[in-house]
Length: 207
Image: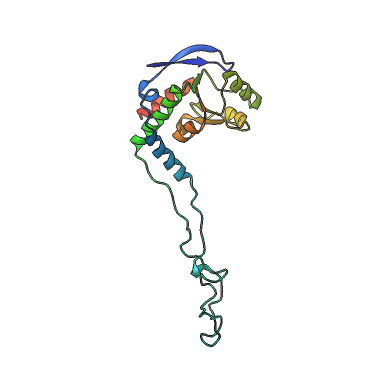
């Protein structure tokens, strides 16, 4: 079991907590992290790009001019792809870019991301991230006291006061344990865990 220091909101050390080696001390395999992150980003794509085909263009079907005798190319209807304003050929249509990654691989990648943060000394545990009021200044003071930047704050459950207080601070994000994911862990420089969230993380891996 690895030991991690537990801090208060003022940045002072108050205790220590044990972190499971099976979650916070696994071997990091970059290709596994890459696979899961790409899958996450693919599932976030809206896939709504669409063009009009020849049959979708609202144009007359009347032949533009006679077939012979004009010295011009033989033209059919105005919706032809070679005409200005005509339909597109092989253009994009709405599609779903999401694809599945095995649950075992997703779980393994989450453990690797957590382990990487601990190995880089970019993980800090706070005794409680809860706030009594919605106040951005309180969150900013806590972040400054902990000497972190571009941080991901993880709580056991959704915390409305913390989320509302942190939303106006650049590069700061708040997530409950159930929303914790590989992409957000890796894209933030520091990971701040509420002490109660660690038990929730263990629960996710036990499920």
